[in-house]
Length: 207
Image 1: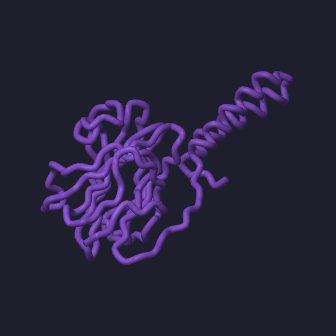
Image 2 (image 1 turned 60 degrees about the horizontal axis):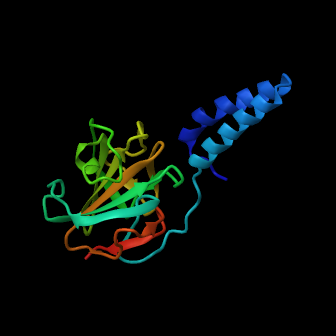
Image 3 (image 1 turned 90 degrees about the vertical axis):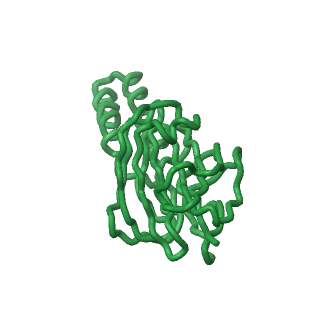
């Protein structure tokens, strides 16, 4: 099972402890440490995805449950926009992916609170990383939003970087939310309650 590179710093500690305890004859402690390492490996899994091909397709930027599809009140796209919000539980894959083939126009980090990620106010108040993307069909915005447990956002991209559809752009550690902001003209095909997979689920089409 592929593991996201950000996970090894968390996994190697309990894995080494498991080996030490087991070698010292403390089998129960070694088994417990190994169980922790395996749980962390599960959280940081980074499965390969089959990326659908098609003109103007918008893919989910993250795994999880759609919790909102609504008008976006912000103005980062400089036009009317729609917000698609995805909640990631601790059981979901937490690697985030580019929803379209694009160029990164801007990356902004905003400090904030750590409210429960499935609530609407998390989109406005929580600590978050904003990735503005420029495409031939217009601008899109991906928000990596920290949650109650998630206290670290990892962003792998920088302004000017070219991204392929479904390419890994970062991750959020231990439960979180990802908002995708698209032009209001885009035709979205998901609704609250739907389950999506980052880099493989089609959530809409750019007009």
